[in-house]
Length: 111
Length: 115
Image 1 (cartoon, rainbow over the protein chains, first blue to last red):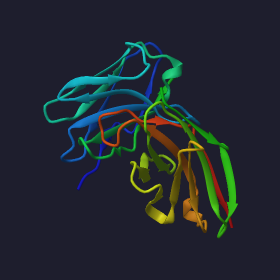
Image 2 (cartoon, one colour):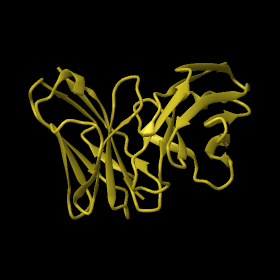
Image 3 (cartoon, rainbow over the protein chains, first blue to last red):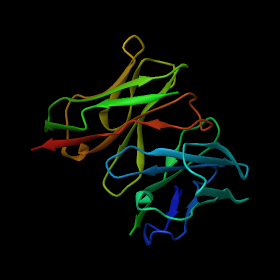
């Protein structure tokens, strides 16, 4: 049973560029959440998608946006990249009433 | 608002010694509490969770944690450390056990196991 799959695993972007990260949830899961983990810190909640709509959002600027597709997969988009956006981005999928399953993350480096 | 404080960003123990990782939480509603482990270049793996049933929770790999409401604590313990336990550990809180609520994480504790 495949778990949560994230792509790409590593990415280097230039300040000011835009980036798209992708996540395929665990089979049977319908909810996708995104977290940002800066170096040496705990993950911080960005937003959560359910039924193709953003259901919850953390304290992140509008430069961070997302999308969920009918097959429950999801994208995280970040515009106008800043050096401070360099982090590990984690996707977690879940089904109502059950816990999260985390992917291995995408390491984004902004130079 | 909810928050988690993990005391000690780095903890070192000898192989075979007791592991104790501290977590204190703040929550305005009955909390649900979690411990996750993260190995280098990997995602988070759930060790155990407290969802208002038994206050002593047993998890994977020999870990357990005790929920103490009076102390607002949820410390993680393991009687005997193994080299493979070396990793980063995160305590997290949510206000619902399922998927509908976000997790708020602590800043993590790096566990080193000395031979």
